[in-house]
Image (cartoon, one colour):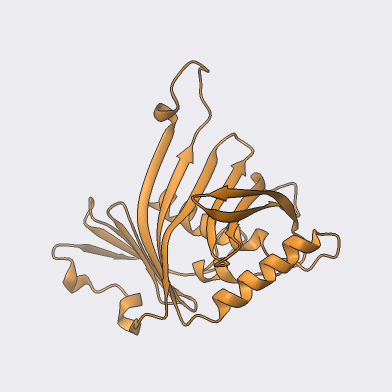
Length: 226
């Protein structure tokens, strides 16, 4: 379960950025201009800290059953600085210094260490705020008011039909240019809704913050898989 959450969470927050990345001339001009402004805003930050809520919605086996049975909600915090990140989510800690990644489970009192390698499915979370890559198609899906804020929802589609998901909706606050929410639509019917609760930037984060110190976790078992 720990590995699934680790891989999923890294995939989720990076996939949001991947779908936001394109200079394809066939895309919506309004959406392109908005994404460019968002990209420039986040690239200017030294680091980013964000509290988040992740809602996982599974398809119902029986239509008459309640939504609660098929919905899971996780809360946590992510802090990023360049290629480094520190994620705290539901008794688990995922830390990366850009080269190594530590995955800690409080329940199991165990930490696994691996080399961190980016693949098509797993990226550095820092890429969530990097925009522009060829191949992704996007357009403005809707504009709406949420708690007095003007929100633009941009719908994005993957360049490959082999992807396990068929689209992502990204919600942006037009006034602050902050990413507010992303919703991934999996082909198997599962929906992942990732929401930013609070965002801050330019905190004083040391290099030690992005490494795992076993001394701070008495009794932890360290498994080095590098």
